[in-house]
Image 1 (spheres, rainbow, N blue to C red):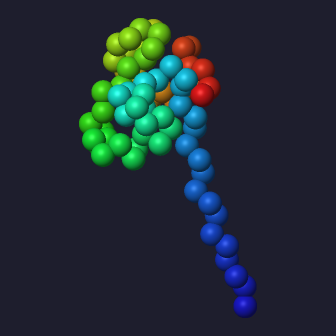
Image 2 (image 1 turned 135 degrees about the horizontal axis):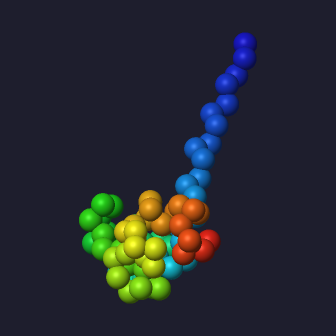
Length: 76
């Protein structure tokens, strides 16, 4: 009898240190516990531009700001 062990899910790439949203500012890294947080309905901004886009002109968002290829990306 062979036992199969479940492989842990890979961790997502770290987000850029410059990415912010209101829930992240108030709750820190536990921001998803904010009662008002709804994935996909969050206004993200970049602290380098203070806008919804980074200095590279691309949108600021959790998934997009995990891309290490962006010139403005810095690991959190």
